Image 1 (tube, rainbow, N blue to C red):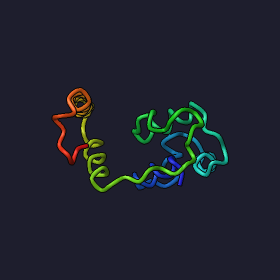
Image 2 (spheres, one colour):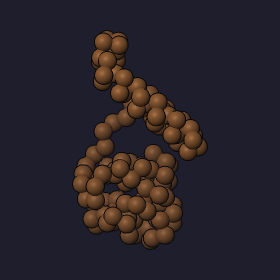
Image 3 (cartoon, rainbow, N blue to C red):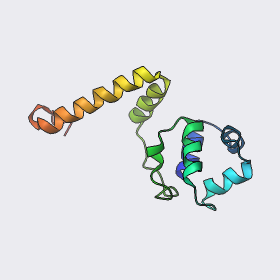
Length: 117
C-alpha cells in the first residue's frame, strides 16, 4: 500500500473523492496511487492540502512514496484523530508541548522513567 492509498483509506475516501478534492481526474489520481506516475511537487502539495496532511509526512518529491507505511499503534491512531480535530491554535499548543517535552528528555535523561526510555 502506498502512502497515498494509506492516507486515503485512513480518511475513508474513495479515489474519486480525493481526485475531486484535488481537481484532477480519478484516472490520473489512480496512476499516482498505484505508482504508475511519479508524483510532482505540485501533486504532493495538492494532496497534502486536500487531505489536510502535513507535506513533510509525504517526504521529498519521489522519495519512498511507494514504500509501505510503518504500522501505527491504536494509541497513535487515537492521538492522530484527536489532533486532527483541533483548531490551529490547539495543534500549535500540542506541538510546542511535545517539542518542550522532547527537549527536556534529551537534556535530562535522568528524568525519564524506565518505560519512557
